[in-house]
Image 1 (tube, rainbow, N blue to C red):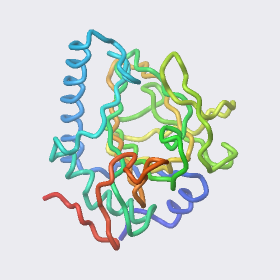
Image 2: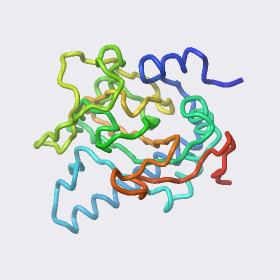
Image 3: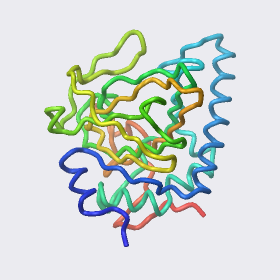
Image 4: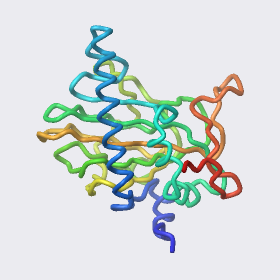
Length: 250
C-alpha cells in the first residue's frame, strides 16, 4: 500500500505541499546526519582558507547550504535514488523524474539565521516547469529551532513563479512581502515536507541550544535548461523513466 494518499495529492495540487511523518528509515537518517556534519566541517575549513565568514548565502556558525555532494558520497546517492524517493516522485511528478539539485541546510545553535519568504523557482529566475522539493529534517523541528513555514497557494495569491528581490543583508531572494505568517511544519526527524518549487516558504531562526539540520533533494519532471541554451540549469540525473527507477544504488 502506498504511503501517499489521495488527500496528499490533493493537498499538493491545491495547496502546493503535503507532509509525510517519520518515513525515512533509521539507517538512512543516521548516514545523512553523519554526512551533514562531515560536509559542514569541510565548508568551515574552506572559509578558513578564504579568511571569510560569509560565502554566498553561507554564514559562519549561523547558516550553511552545502550543495550537490552526492557524486562524492555513495551514502547520499542511496537515499536520493531510493524506493522511498521514487514513490514520492511518481506521485507528484509522474513517471519521468530527474535529480535537479540536492543540499544540506543547517542552522547553528542559538544564532541560526532565518530564511526569507521565497519560491525555490525564484532562485532559478526564468520560466520553467515547477519541480519538487523534499525537505527532510534530520532533527526534530519546532518553531523554536527554525522549522519551515508553508504558504498555501490560495493565501499566497498565486501558484506561479513571481519576481524575487535580493535582500542585501543576507543575500536571500525574497518574493512574498505580505503579513501571512504561513503554516509551521512541526514534525519529528525523518519526516518529509514535499512541496512544489512555486510554493512560498520561509524558516525562522534557531533559538535553541542544538543544531538544526535538513537534507533537501529536489527533482524535476524534465531537464530544466538555461534560458538561452540547452545546457542544464542544475543537475539532470535520470531517476525515473516510464515509472522505473533507472538510478537505483545498491
